[in-house]
Every structure is written in C-alpha cells, then in structure tokens.
Amino acid sequence: MDISTRLSESQQGSQMSKRHGKPNPNRVKINRNYSLKEIARLFGSLATVRRWLKAGLRTIDSARPLLVRGMELKQFVRRWRSRNRQRCGPGQMYCLKCRAPRRPSNGEVELIQETENCGRVRGACSTCGTSMSRIVSLRSLDAALGALAATATSAEQRLSDRGFPGLNDYIEEVK
Ligand SMILES: [Zn+2]
Image (tube, rainbow, N blue to C red; front, side, top):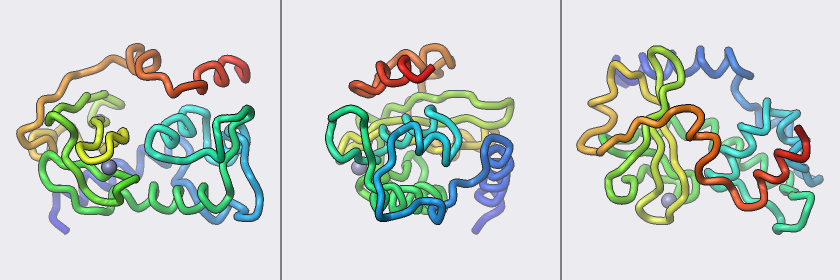
C-alpha cells in the first residue's frame, strides 16, 4: 500500500466515524426482513439507505413498505465496508454490483465536496449502469480521476437530482 492510499483511507475513516461509524454487518439478523426505516435506525440515516439502494441494495419487490431481506442486507453491508479496500486504478471506481473496479460511463463523474479536504466522486458504472462513488482526498484528486471529466455539484442539487423511484415519497412520509 503506498502512502497516498493510506492517507486517503485514514481521512475517510475519521470522516466516517464522525458521522456514524463503520457499518457493522453483524447487527443484521439474516432471518428477518427490514424496512428502510429500520435500516436507517441501525446504520445512521435515510440518506445512507438511499445511497445503498442506488448502489445496488435490493428490496424484495416494489410493494410498500419497501423491505430488504436480512441476508441481502448483511451481504451488502459487507461489500460496502470493503469497497474502498479494492484497488481502483486512476479513473476507476468500485462497482458494488459488478464487484469490481469499473470505469464510469462516458468517462464522466460528478464531484461533490464533502469537507474541506475530502470529496465524493460519483458516476455510473460503464458495464451495468449502477451508481458508484469513491471518496477522495482533494489533494490527490488528479491521481484518482485520471482522464475523467468531473463536474462539481452542490449539495442542494445532489438531494433533488436522480431520485430513486418511489423512495422520495417515502422519505417525505417519514419526515
Ligand atoms: Zn457495474
């Protein structure tokens, strides 16, 4: 592991723990189903759940309330925890659905600044179309992006764009 990787991982770690710690897959019971609200309660917030759904967490079907099988949730949280340990080359992000580093489609990504030193790069997988994201240290941004074209996005835009079908209504309901 080189120094720059270690640096971005430790930054990311401190940021994660500030929010709600690393999600622990052992909190999930595999023999039951979870509503989105219950997942949010276990792992932090509905924003987290929404991010996971975009990243490929599967619900049982689209009937309300949306439910996720415990087994699916547990496996997903495991993959989610280890996604940043995968080696992604310049211009690659880890796709949770393909379970491999992938290039974003059209070589385009969004850059969302999260803190002064840290940002989230987001794009769609060029193989399966799933939303992928990668946390990057803004100092090593050029190395992470490679030849990708990044568009900076503000926090407001991020909340309103690309809603997950049906989920926005749900979030309205539970507010
Ligand atoms: Zn993919």
